[in-house]
Image (cartoon, rainbow, N blue to C red):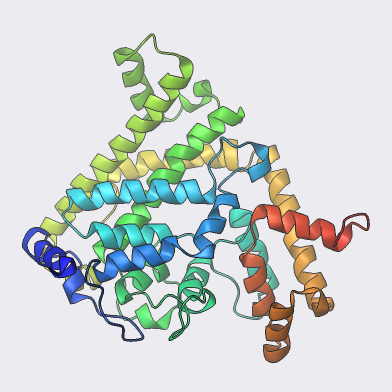
Length: 383
């Protein structure tokens, strides 16, 4: 019995015509024998989960650095939440859940320590050497940097998963990866991950922001989308504890956005006459999006988070610390590369490329970067 073939046959019979079918994958860069149990997309998902880069997401910043509390979301828990939301949308739209999950699990593997502050700093440090983009770096991780197999570099993922990683964005720009530049959009599965990412970080940053004391319920009541959902929670469950009330409201906020995306995406697919995955890729517009009304309300929510959470003085102070830590580490490695671990030093000597130092720093967790900074600059810290 070949379970993979059974699964692929089921997909061909039950998924929508615009889905990405495992049996019709564009394949891998290096030919491999197929697995008799897992489809190519299932196999990619498993390879991603077993990487060091995926495990290190546990100690990489979402909004709050790991030592600020073990309740707050990390880049790993955020990734798991994105995968859950994305699979729900994918199932409703009858597209490939396994591909959606694989892209979701890999979408943030290229983030350096300290989240977007780390990315901004590395981009500035590499300004004359191609800059740093976490989507491009995620692709480099799965294509080159994760060494696990004897016959090829990286994970040798399918075209469809690599495309979803390279084109992961919540805007309409392209990351500049020429292999995927011939078409403006990713598959619908890849687009679903983009919008699920936005739903996850907006909703869950509210939860973390309230828990931290940086956001207030009263302040959020000035945001129409939150006020609408919170009022329904109050009417339906007026006497529940505050924590339960908050979590119910966040859950309903996610559900409201998910239903909107499903409805708007379905409408666009019908209006644009989408009948294949190639029609998705070469379409005139992105398909997996919010409706105009939800987009407006979501933007109001993001504006509130930007003003009252992401620019809150505690977050800004930590961002400043993060930028100094990464800049100090990068420059001291560059000035005295012998301080690098032997394998990294050998690669730096061979290539004379700042990218080698950047790759090493990007792979660090917040904790490791903080400890490394102490070892490099504190004379009382053991090296």
